[in-house]
Image 1 (cartoon, helix red, strand yellow):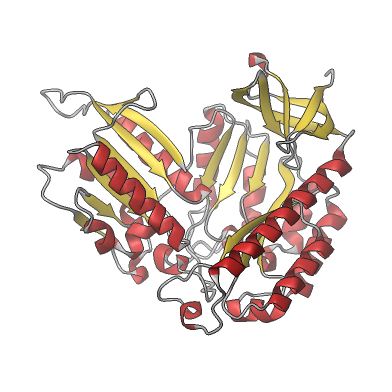
Image 2: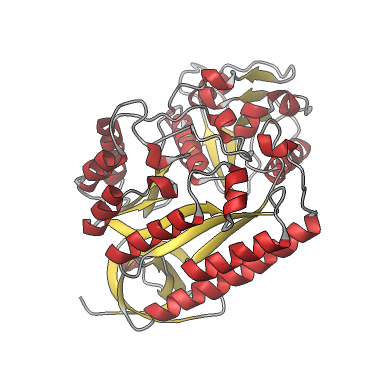
Length: 449
Protein backbone atom coordinates (compact mmCIF):
# COMPACT_ATOMS: atom_id res chain seq x y z
CA UNK A 1 0.00 0.00 0.00
CA UNK A 2 1.23 3.50 -0.86
CA UNK A 3 0.34 6.79 0.86
CA UNK A 4 1.05 10.37 -0.02
CA UNK A 5 -0.32 13.71 1.12
CA UNK A 6 -0.78 17.03 -0.68
CA UNK A 7 -1.73 20.55 0.33
CA UNK A 8 -4.27 22.24 -1.94
CA UNK A 9 -5.49 25.72 -2.82
CA UNK A 10 -7.97 25.90 -5.69
CA UNK A 11 -6.65 28.41 -8.22
CA UNK A 12 -10.01 29.09 -9.82
CA UNK A 13 -11.54 30.30 -6.56
CA UNK A 14 -11.38 34.09 -6.66
CA UNK A 15 -11.63 34.20 -2.87
CA UNK A 16 -8.73 31.75 -2.55
CA UNK A 17 -10.07 28.85 -0.50
CA UNK A 18 -8.14 28.00 2.65
CA UNK A 19 -5.24 25.62 2.19
CA UNK A 20 -6.43 22.00 2.36
CA UNK A 21 -4.57 18.71 2.68
CA UNK A 22 -5.34 15.73 0.50
CA UNK A 23 -4.08 12.18 1.06
CA UNK A 24 -3.95 9.27 -1.37
CA UNK A 25 -3.97 5.58 -0.47
CA UNK A 26 -3.16 3.02 -3.16
CA UNK A 27 -3.99 -0.66 -2.76
CA UNK A 28 -2.98 -3.45 -5.12
CA UNK A 29 -0.96 -3.42 -8.29
CA UNK A 30 1.61 -1.20 -9.98
CA UNK A 31 -1.10 -0.17 -12.44
CA UNK A 32 -3.09 1.36 -9.57
CA UNK A 33 0.07 3.13 -8.39
CA UNK A 34 0.58 4.72 -11.83
CA UNK A 35 -3.05 5.85 -11.88
CA UNK A 36 -2.96 7.31 -8.36
CA UNK A 37 0.16 9.27 -9.26
CA UNK A 38 -1.59 10.70 -12.31
CA UNK A 39 -4.69 11.63 -10.29
CA UNK A 40 -2.37 13.38 -7.83
CA UNK A 41 -0.79 15.41 -10.63
CA UNK A 42 -4.25 16.66 -11.58
CA UNK A 43 -4.63 17.95 -8.02
CA UNK A 44 -1.19 19.54 -8.17
CA UNK A 45 -2.10 21.32 -11.39
CA UNK A 46 -5.18 22.60 -9.59
CA UNK A 47 -3.03 24.21 -6.93
CA UNK A 48 -1.80 21.41 -4.68
CA UNK A 49 1.56 21.38 -2.91
CA UNK A 50 3.01 18.31 -1.24
CA UNK A 51 2.60 18.40 2.56
CA UNK A 52 4.51 16.72 5.34
CA UNK A 53 3.57 13.08 5.62
CA UNK A 54 1.55 12.20 8.70
CA UNK A 55 -0.51 15.37 8.84
CA UNK A 56 -4.26 14.98 8.80
CA UNK A 57 -6.00 15.60 5.51
CA UNK A 58 -9.27 17.25 4.54
CA UNK A 59 -9.71 15.05 1.47
CA UNK A 60 -8.77 11.37 1.03
CA UNK A 61 -8.70 9.40 -2.21
CA UNK A 62 -8.46 5.62 -1.85
CA UNK A 63 -7.59 3.71 -5.04
CA UNK A 64 -8.86 0.21 -4.28
CA UNK A 65 -8.06 -3.33 -5.35
CA UNK A 66 -10.47 -6.27 -5.51
CA UNK A 67 -8.30 -9.19 -6.56
CA UNK A 68 -9.13 -10.97 -3.27
CA UNK A 69 -11.62 -10.67 -0.43
CA UNK A 70 -8.69 -9.60 1.74
CA UNK A 71 -8.14 -6.62 -0.57
CA UNK A 72 -11.81 -5.63 -0.24
CA UNK A 73 -11.65 -5.93 3.54
CA UNK A 74 -8.44 -3.91 3.72
CA UNK A 75 -10.06 -1.13 1.72
CA UNK A 76 -13.13 -1.04 3.97
CA UNK A 77 -10.93 -0.92 7.06
CA UNK A 78 -8.90 1.99 5.69
CA UNK A 79 -12.04 3.91 4.72
CA UNK A 80 -13.65 3.44 8.14
CA UNK A 81 -10.45 4.38 9.96
CA UNK A 82 -10.00 7.55 7.93
CA UNK A 83 -13.60 8.58 8.54
CA UNK A 84 -13.29 7.90 12.26
CA UNK A 85 -10.00 9.78 12.61
CA UNK A 86 -11.00 12.65 10.31
CA UNK A 87 -14.68 13.45 10.82
CA UNK A 88 -15.86 15.85 8.15
CA UNK A 89 -13.10 14.94 5.68
CA UNK A 90 -14.14 14.31 2.08
CA UNK A 91 -13.61 10.60 1.31
CA UNK A 92 -13.40 9.31 -2.27
CA UNK A 93 -13.07 5.62 -3.18
CA UNK A 94 -12.10 4.59 -6.70
CA UNK A 95 -10.56 1.53 -8.37
CA UNK A 96 -11.66 -2.05 -8.90
CA UNK A 97 -13.60 -2.50 -5.64
CA UNK A 98 -15.44 0.74 -6.36
CA UNK A 99 -16.26 -0.53 -9.84
CA UNK A 100 -17.49 -3.95 -8.73
CA UNK A 101 -19.33 -3.10 -5.52
CA UNK A 102 -20.06 0.63 -5.52
CA UNK A 103 -23.16 0.41 -3.32
CA UNK A 104 -21.26 -1.55 -0.67
CA UNK A 105 -18.80 1.32 -0.35
CA UNK A 106 -21.46 4.02 -0.67
CA UNK A 107 -23.28 2.49 2.29
CA UNK A 108 -20.35 3.33 4.59
CA UNK A 109 -21.36 6.48 6.43
CA UNK A 110 -18.88 9.24 5.67
CA UNK A 111 -18.01 8.22 2.10
CA UNK A 112 -18.69 11.11 -0.29
CA UNK A 113 -17.76 9.81 -3.75
CA UNK A 114 -17.50 6.32 -5.25
CA UNK A 115 -15.84 6.57 -8.67
CA UNK A 116 -15.52 3.59 -11.02
CA UNK A 117 -12.59 2.88 -13.30
CA UNK A 118 -14.04 4.71 -16.31
CA UNK A 119 -14.16 7.99 -14.37
CA UNK A 120 -10.81 8.00 -12.52
CA UNK A 121 -9.63 10.93 -14.61
CA UNK A 122 -12.50 13.11 -13.36
CA UNK A 123 -11.84 12.79 -9.63
CA UNK A 124 -10.25 16.21 -9.17
CA UNK A 125 -13.14 17.96 -10.92
CA UNK A 126 -15.72 15.98 -8.94
CA UNK A 127 -14.04 16.77 -5.63
CA UNK A 128 -13.75 20.47 -6.54
CA UNK A 129 -17.47 20.54 -7.39
CA UNK A 130 -18.62 18.94 -4.13
CA UNK A 131 -20.96 20.94 -1.97
CA UNK A 132 -22.10 20.13 1.54
CA UNK A 133 -21.84 16.46 2.58
CA UNK A 134 -25.12 14.71 1.80
CA UNK A 135 -24.17 11.06 1.55
CA UNK A 136 -22.25 9.24 -1.16
CA UNK A 137 -22.55 9.98 -4.87
CA UNK A 138 -21.76 7.04 -7.16
CA UNK A 139 -20.20 7.35 -10.62
CA UNK A 140 -19.80 3.90 -12.20
CA UNK A 141 -20.91 1.97 -15.28
CA UNK A 142 -21.50 -1.60 -16.43
CA UNK A 143 -18.51 -3.77 -17.38
CA UNK A 144 -19.42 -3.57 -21.07
CA UNK A 145 -19.14 0.22 -20.93
CA UNK A 146 -15.56 0.17 -19.60
CA UNK A 147 -14.08 1.37 -22.87
CA UNK A 148 -12.12 4.48 -21.91
CA UNK A 149 -8.38 4.55 -21.37
CA UNK A 150 -7.03 6.61 -18.48
CA UNK A 151 -3.45 7.37 -19.52
CA UNK A 152 -1.16 7.18 -16.49
CA UNK A 153 2.41 7.05 -15.27
CA UNK A 154 3.97 7.51 -11.85
CA UNK A 155 6.35 10.26 -10.81
CA UNK A 156 6.77 9.69 -7.06
CA UNK A 157 10.06 7.81 -7.36
CA UNK A 158 13.23 9.65 -8.38
CA UNK A 159 14.62 6.75 -10.38
CA UNK A 160 11.72 4.60 -11.61
CA UNK A 161 8.33 5.19 -13.22
CA UNK A 162 5.41 2.82 -13.79
CA UNK A 163 3.97 3.46 -17.25
CA UNK A 164 0.48 2.18 -18.01
CA UNK A 165 0.53 0.73 -21.53
CA UNK A 166 -2.59 -1.46 -21.51
CA UNK A 167 -5.83 -1.96 -19.58
CA UNK A 168 -8.50 -4.67 -19.33
CA UNK A 169 -8.41 -8.37 -20.14
CA UNK A 170 -10.21 -10.71 -22.55
CA UNK A 171 -9.07 -13.96 -20.92
CA UNK A 172 -11.81 -14.61 -18.32
CA UNK A 173 -9.93 -17.13 -16.19
CA UNK A 174 -12.40 -18.97 -13.98
CA UNK A 175 -11.20 -17.41 -10.70
CA UNK A 176 -10.69 -13.81 -11.83
CA UNK A 177 -13.03 -10.85 -11.56
CA UNK A 178 -10.70 -8.33 -13.15
CA UNK A 179 -12.37 -8.41 -16.62
CA UNK A 180 -15.56 -7.29 -14.85
CA UNK A 181 -13.69 -4.53 -13.04
CA UNK A 182 -11.48 -3.36 -15.90
CA UNK A 183 -13.34 -4.32 -19.09
CA UNK A 184 -11.94 -5.64 -22.35
CA UNK A 185 -8.29 -5.39 -23.40
CA UNK A 186 -7.43 -1.98 -24.83
CA UNK A 187 -4.51 0.40 -25.23
CA UNK A 188 -3.30 3.76 -26.47
CA UNK A 189 -1.39 3.99 -29.77
CA UNK A 190 2.36 3.39 -29.62
CA UNK A 191 3.05 7.00 -30.57
CA UNK A 192 1.11 8.27 -27.55
CA UNK A 193 3.01 5.97 -25.20
CA UNK A 194 6.32 7.12 -26.66
CA UNK A 195 5.34 10.67 -25.76
CA UNK A 196 4.53 9.49 -22.21
CA UNK A 197 7.97 7.86 -21.98
CA UNK A 198 9.60 11.05 -23.24
CA UNK A 199 7.76 12.99 -20.51
CA UNK A 200 9.10 10.54 -17.93
CA UNK A 201 12.63 10.94 -19.30
CA UNK A 202 12.27 14.72 -19.09
CA UNK A 203 11.61 14.36 -15.36
CA UNK A 204 14.94 12.58 -14.93
CA UNK A 205 13.68 9.07 -14.19
CA UNK A 206 15.91 6.47 -15.81
CA UNK A 207 13.88 3.27 -15.50
CA UNK A 208 10.35 2.51 -16.73
CA UNK A 209 8.27 -0.48 -15.69
CA UNK A 210 5.59 -1.30 -18.27
CA UNK A 211 2.32 -1.98 -16.47
CA UNK A 212 -1.17 -3.13 -17.39
CA UNK A 213 -3.65 -5.91 -16.75
CA UNK A 214 -2.40 -8.08 -19.62
CA UNK A 215 0.48 -6.15 -21.19
CA UNK A 216 1.43 -8.81 -23.73
CA UNK A 217 -2.04 -8.46 -25.25
CA UNK A 218 -1.14 -4.93 -26.29
CA UNK A 219 -2.59 -3.79 -29.62
CA UNK A 220 -6.19 -4.98 -29.42
CA UNK A 221 -7.56 -1.51 -30.12
CA UNK A 222 -4.86 -0.15 -32.43
CA UNK A 223 -3.74 -3.12 -34.52
CA UNK A 224 -0.17 -2.73 -33.29
CA UNK A 225 1.82 -5.42 -31.51
CA UNK A 226 3.60 -5.62 -28.19
CA UNK A 227 6.93 -5.86 -30.02
CA UNK A 228 6.04 -2.67 -31.94
CA UNK A 229 5.72 -0.96 -28.56
CA UNK A 230 8.99 -2.41 -27.26
CA UNK A 231 10.91 -1.27 -30.35
CA UNK A 232 9.53 2.27 -30.15
CA UNK A 233 10.23 2.64 -26.44
CA UNK A 234 13.75 1.27 -26.90
CA UNK A 235 14.52 4.31 -29.05
CA UNK A 236 13.44 6.90 -26.44
CA UNK A 237 16.41 8.92 -25.26
CA UNK A 238 17.05 9.41 -21.56
CA UNK A 239 15.59 6.08 -20.46
CA UNK A 240 18.28 3.52 -19.65
CA UNK A 241 16.15 0.62 -18.40
CA UNK A 242 12.79 -1.00 -19.07
CA UNK A 243 11.13 -3.85 -17.21
CA UNK A 244 7.98 -5.74 -18.20
CA UNK A 245 5.86 -5.97 -15.04
CA UNK A 246 4.06 -9.20 -16.00
CA UNK A 247 3.44 -11.15 -19.18
CA UNK A 248 1.29 -14.22 -19.79
CA UNK A 249 3.35 -17.28 -20.84
CA UNK A 250 1.39 -17.72 -24.07
CA UNK A 251 2.23 -14.11 -24.99
CA UNK A 252 5.94 -14.52 -24.26
CA UNK A 253 6.57 -15.11 -27.96
CA UNK A 254 9.80 -15.90 -29.77
CA UNK A 255 9.70 -12.37 -31.21
CA UNK A 256 9.40 -10.79 -27.75
CA UNK A 257 12.20 -12.99 -26.41
CA UNK A 258 14.53 -12.23 -29.32
CA UNK A 259 13.94 -8.49 -29.06
CA UNK A 260 14.55 -8.27 -25.32
CA UNK A 261 17.62 -10.50 -25.64
CA UNK A 262 19.11 -8.08 -28.16
CA UNK A 263 18.17 -4.87 -26.36
CA UNK A 264 20.54 -3.03 -24.06
CA UNK A 265 17.60 -1.34 -22.32
CA UNK A 266 15.13 -4.16 -21.68
CA UNK A 267 16.36 -5.94 -18.60
CA UNK A 268 16.81 -9.73 -18.11
CA UNK A 269 13.82 -9.87 -15.79
CA UNK A 270 10.39 -11.40 -16.43
CA UNK A 271 7.37 -11.84 -14.21
CA UNK A 272 5.27 -14.68 -15.61
CA UNK A 273 1.99 -15.90 -14.03
CA UNK A 274 1.93 -19.68 -13.65
CA UNK A 275 -0.93 -20.03 -11.08
CA UNK A 276 -0.56 -23.81 -10.82
CA UNK A 277 2.05 -26.40 -11.69
CA UNK A 278 -0.67 -29.05 -12.12
CA UNK A 279 -2.28 -29.42 -15.56
CA UNK A 280 -5.60 -30.56 -14.09
CA UNK A 281 -5.88 -27.39 -12.02
CA UNK A 282 -4.72 -25.20 -14.92
CA UNK A 283 -7.60 -26.58 -16.98
CA UNK A 284 -10.08 -25.80 -14.19
CA UNK A 285 -8.63 -22.30 -14.00
CA UNK A 286 -9.15 -21.90 -17.77
CA UNK A 287 -5.54 -20.90 -18.32
CA UNK A 288 -4.27 -20.87 -21.92
CA UNK A 289 -1.30 -23.22 -21.55
CA UNK A 290 -0.17 -26.37 -19.76
CA UNK A 291 2.97 -26.99 -17.73
CA UNK A 292 4.87 -28.37 -20.73
CA UNK A 293 4.26 -25.17 -22.67
CA UNK A 294 5.16 -23.03 -19.65
CA UNK A 295 8.45 -24.89 -19.13
CA UNK A 296 9.23 -24.60 -22.83
CA UNK A 297 8.78 -20.80 -22.73
CA UNK A 298 11.00 -20.49 -19.66
CA UNK A 299 13.64 -22.58 -21.41
CA UNK A 300 13.38 -20.47 -24.58
CA UNK A 301 14.14 -17.31 -22.59
CA UNK A 302 17.04 -18.86 -20.69
CA UNK A 303 18.57 -20.09 -23.93
CA UNK A 304 18.93 -16.50 -25.16
CA UNK A 305 19.24 -14.53 -21.89
CA UNK A 306 21.69 -16.07 -19.41
CA UNK A 307 21.15 -15.10 -15.77
CA UNK A 308 17.56 -14.03 -16.38
CA UNK A 309 15.40 -13.45 -13.29
CA UNK A 310 11.97 -15.11 -13.30
CA UNK A 311 9.28 -14.12 -10.83
CA UNK A 312 6.24 -16.40 -10.93
CA UNK A 313 2.69 -16.07 -9.55
CA UNK A 314 1.10 -19.13 -7.94
CA UNK A 315 -2.40 -19.60 -6.50
CA UNK A 316 -2.86 -22.35 -3.92
CA UNK A 317 -6.05 -23.80 -2.53
CA UNK A 318 -8.02 -23.52 -5.78
CA UNK A 319 -11.28 -25.52 -5.63
CA UNK A 320 -10.51 -29.18 -6.22
CA UNK A 321 -6.76 -28.87 -5.54
CA UNK A 322 -5.79 -32.04 -3.70
CA UNK A 323 -2.65 -32.68 -1.68
CA UNK A 324 -1.25 -34.57 -4.65
CA UNK A 325 -2.05 -31.68 -7.03
CA UNK A 326 -0.16 -29.36 -4.72
CA UNK A 327 2.82 -31.73 -4.58
CA UNK A 328 2.80 -31.82 -8.40
CA UNK A 329 3.02 -28.01 -8.35
CA UNK A 330 5.92 -28.13 -5.90
CA UNK A 331 7.81 -30.61 -8.06
CA UNK A 332 7.21 -28.50 -11.17
CA UNK A 333 8.53 -25.38 -9.44
CA UNK A 334 11.62 -27.28 -8.31
CA UNK A 335 12.09 -28.33 -11.91
CA UNK A 336 11.85 -24.89 -13.54
CA UNK A 337 13.53 -23.09 -10.60
CA UNK A 338 12.32 -19.49 -10.82
CA UNK A 339 14.11 -16.84 -8.74
CA UNK A 340 11.02 -15.77 -6.83
CA UNK A 341 7.45 -16.90 -6.12
CA UNK A 342 4.52 -14.57 -5.48
CA UNK A 343 2.05 -16.85 -3.70
CA UNK A 344 -1.66 -16.22 -3.14
CA UNK A 345 -4.26 -18.33 -1.36
CA UNK A 346 -7.32 -18.74 -3.57
CA UNK A 347 -10.02 -16.19 -2.76
CA UNK A 348 -13.66 -16.67 -3.80
CA UNK A 349 -14.68 -13.86 -6.15
CA UNK A 350 -18.40 -13.33 -6.81
CA UNK A 351 -19.69 -13.82 -10.37
CA UNK A 352 -16.82 -16.08 -11.39
CA UNK A 353 -17.15 -19.77 -12.42
CA UNK A 354 -14.73 -20.90 -9.70
CA UNK A 355 -17.05 -19.54 -7.01
CA UNK A 356 -19.53 -22.31 -7.89
CA UNK A 357 -16.99 -25.13 -8.10
CA UNK A 358 -16.97 -28.06 -5.68
CA UNK A 359 -13.99 -29.17 -3.63
CA UNK A 360 -13.36 -26.07 -1.55
CA UNK A 361 -10.00 -26.22 0.24
CA UNK A 362 -9.97 -25.52 3.98
CA UNK A 363 -8.34 -22.17 4.89
CA UNK A 364 -5.79 -23.81 7.19
CA UNK A 365 -4.73 -26.17 4.40
CA UNK A 366 -4.35 -23.27 1.96
CA UNK A 367 -2.36 -21.33 4.57
CA UNK A 368 0.00 -24.28 5.03
CA UNK A 369 0.53 -24.44 1.25
CA UNK A 370 1.29 -20.72 1.16
CA UNK A 371 3.89 -21.26 3.88
CA UNK A 372 5.45 -24.19 2.01
CA UNK A 373 5.84 -22.17 -1.17
CA UNK A 374 7.09 -19.16 0.77
CA UNK A 375 9.90 -21.29 2.13
CA UNK A 376 10.59 -22.64 -1.35
CA UNK A 377 10.69 -19.09 -2.73
CA UNK A 378 13.30 -18.03 -0.16
CA UNK A 379 15.43 -21.03 -1.01
CA UNK A 380 15.14 -20.46 -4.77
CA UNK A 381 16.02 -16.77 -4.44
CA UNK A 382 19.11 -17.46 -2.36
CA UNK A 383 20.18 -20.13 -4.83
CA UNK A 384 19.71 -17.72 -7.74
CA UNK A 385 21.73 -15.01 -6.01
CA UNK A 386 24.46 -17.44 -4.95
CA UNK A 387 25.02 -18.26 -8.62
CA UNK A 388 25.58 -14.54 -9.29
CA UNK A 389 27.98 -13.97 -6.37
CA UNK A 390 31.35 -12.62 -7.48
CA UNK A 391 30.03 -11.47 -10.85
CA UNK A 392 29.93 -7.93 -12.18
CA UNK A 393 26.58 -6.18 -12.56
CA UNK A 394 25.17 -2.71 -13.16
CA UNK A 395 23.03 -1.13 -10.45
CA UNK A 396 20.63 1.82 -10.60
CA UNK A 397 20.87 3.44 -7.17
CA UNK A 398 17.81 4.70 -5.34
CA UNK A 399 17.44 7.53 -2.82
CA UNK A 400 16.39 5.37 0.14
CA UNK A 401 18.82 5.57 3.05
CA UNK A 402 18.68 3.02 5.86
CA UNK A 403 21.34 2.14 8.40
CA UNK A 404 23.94 4.19 6.55
CA UNK A 405 23.38 2.28 3.30
CA UNK A 406 21.68 2.96 -0.03
CA UNK A 407 19.99 0.37 -2.23
CA UNK A 408 19.46 -0.48 -5.86
CA UNK A 409 18.76 -3.32 -8.27
CA UNK A 410 20.93 -5.12 -10.79
CA UNK A 411 19.79 -5.70 -14.34
CA UNK A 412 18.40 -9.07 -13.27
CA UNK A 413 16.64 -7.68 -10.20
CA UNK A 414 18.95 -8.62 -7.35
CA UNK A 415 18.58 -6.05 -4.59
CA UNK A 416 21.95 -4.75 -3.39
CA UNK A 417 23.33 -2.32 -0.83
CA UNK A 418 26.41 -0.13 -0.51
CA UNK A 419 27.40 2.73 1.84
CA UNK A 420 25.24 5.78 1.19
CA UNK A 421 26.61 8.36 -1.22
CA UNK A 422 24.22 11.13 -2.27
CA UNK A 423 26.09 11.62 -5.54
CA UNK A 424 25.20 8.09 -6.63
CA UNK A 425 21.41 8.58 -6.42
CA UNK A 426 19.81 7.92 -9.84
CA UNK A 427 23.12 6.84 -11.36
CA UNK A 428 24.10 3.46 -12.77
CA UNK A 429 27.41 2.01 -11.62
CA UNK A 430 29.33 -1.22 -12.07
CA UNK A 431 29.57 -3.40 -8.99
CA UNK A 432 30.80 -6.79 -7.90
CA UNK A 433 28.14 -8.83 -6.15
CA UNK A 434 28.74 -10.22 -2.68
CA UNK A 435 26.80 -12.60 -0.48
CA UNK A 436 23.23 -12.04 0.70
CA UNK A 437 22.61 -10.75 4.21
CA UNK A 438 19.83 -11.95 6.51
CA UNK A 439 17.36 -9.63 4.73
CA UNK A 440 18.11 -11.13 1.33
CA UNK A 441 20.10 -8.10 0.14
CA UNK A 442 23.47 -8.54 -1.57
CA UNK A 443 26.48 -6.45 -0.58
CA UNK A 444 27.85 -4.61 -3.61
CA UNK A 445 31.40 -3.43 -4.08
CA UNK A 446 31.61 -0.38 -6.39
CA UNK A 447 34.06 -0.93 -9.26
CA UNK A 448 36.09 1.88 -10.77
CA UNK A 449 34.57 3.27 -13.94
